[in-house]
Image (cartoon, rainbow, N blue to C red; front, side, top):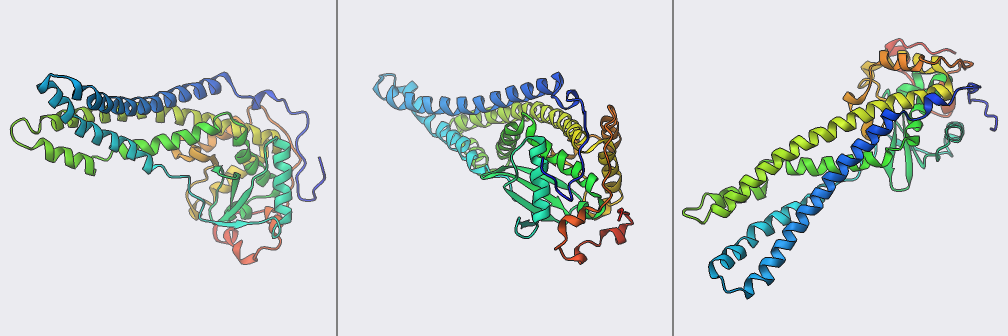
Length: 351
């Protein structure tokens, strides 16, 4: 490992066992993968059933002599086709993960920071981020769905509140998410969630059309009433099923937060992570509470409390030499006025 003047020394003789995924971790990944697979298989199956019915009614019924049955079957093509169009239109609701609100920074302007990040990634054993952003939050996160690789978001509040050892622990936690086996699952959870939100719209164009059709007199509204009732049943089942998916994802995200903390402890030591959490807690007025999450794991309910994280970080104490220099030395070329959080909120940083 090459020497960098601003890179704190890593602990030595650290046991590898705490950073290995536990059986519970792997079981939660498997459970979430199964639930998501069933969700998407159901979506595809319903689409194929609608297509199959339309093909059958068009090709078979037109050659049969049963007038009444054929007429009903052919008339049903209209609502089934509408259901298929609505079902497939949900694909248009899928959006890519948004970019952060902060400014993108580049190695040319911040060579010390990028060298720090590169060495940290090499030590953890993951690819280096292709894009780095700086925003005004007391927060940090990784972007796992960029088309050209991983992104890293760093909050100015973190830079201002933390020393180099603590800053290393925070970034090690974030980058540690990239070592976990559920990175791809987070992407599918986001896509499935967007589809579910689309289907949960209770006053969409399709449903208003069906209600208007169902209000027609005599038997004209019977097909629409049947479809409307069936769709409400599907929506009820979908809402219940998504509850299981959401619960499984939150349980996995919580486990992965603790696992990423253990990676940070292996890279920076127990005290560095615990001290970072304590310092960031005094800066919470700057923004939302600190959420060291990767991707979809950023949901507040998925995060253990600071007390739980401290207990997890100190379960197997890992001593490390502390580097008290402020993390802002990595931004020596930055405007000093952008680092005014300490004076406002009283978060002392070692000089």
